[in-house]
View 1: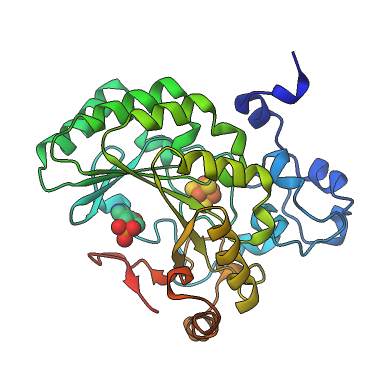
View 2 (view 1 turned 135 degrees about the vertical axis):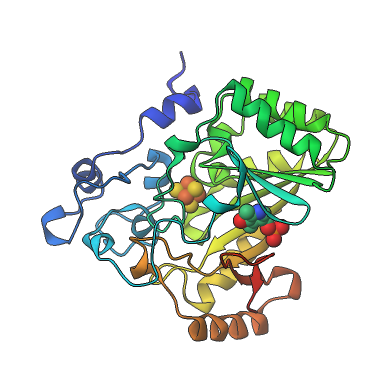
Length: 327
Ligand SMILES: *Cc1c(COP(=O)(O)O)cnc(C)c1O
Ligand code: SF4
């Protein structure tokens, strides 16, 4: 087989999961930094993503998103394991019904990459695994609630499901009369673009409901030619393509970075949607940007960008009936 034609599943197994190996590859000496060598939320990163990092640079904005460090072990008041009240909002296994008309569906607990700032990094996925019976119940819940107009496939990353499972699920949703839209929230086009196969795109083209695909990129350096071609393939299937980012200290908390990110996304046919304030999951405190700084950043980027390239700065509050728009 042509070695350049590896499957995405193969690429996934070849990613880094060992901190020492990652440091060796990037010419970093692990002993110099306060690296965390074992964590319940382990290192996981595709090689393709690592190749976009600068060798020898411990402050690389992509590396900082995935490298476990000792700061994660410090606990802070207000930071906990269920920062946005997902568990109380679960109406059936996997189905989080917080907002009117929309349900979020946790299809899998796995991701291609483990982002250290993830708000679901401590989520007890194993308690909420879907089996055939639970999947039926979840779909029944959506069928029974006629005011649901949109299902958001989330996770984990829904694109880590096999084609068979993913297509079957979407096909079943596509047949539910009162649903208007199917939304996919996935970091895959950015971190493992080879997953966006021709088969996947052909399938998307057959779906009758409107599809919204929300990718997740935080920094321009993530956006290389492979990502561009994945986005453009998705776009060709008549899909609305949006991006959400998380505002992260030391990674993208600079106006010029946010400006070039929006511009690059647009050149990939992707519109900025949300810029999230960090959700306060335990272990993520060192990424927090305070509200005042965030609002100042928004003021600066608004001056430099057309309105359609300015993401909405939002945060999520337990119990609120929608995401809170800050700016
Ligand atoms: C973010 C989120 C949504 C979607 O909210 P939008 O503002 O429509 O993007 C839906 N359900 C849950 C539980 C969410 O966290
Ligand atoms: S891809 Fe998304 S869900 Fe997965 S670890 Fe990263 S932020 Fe969390």
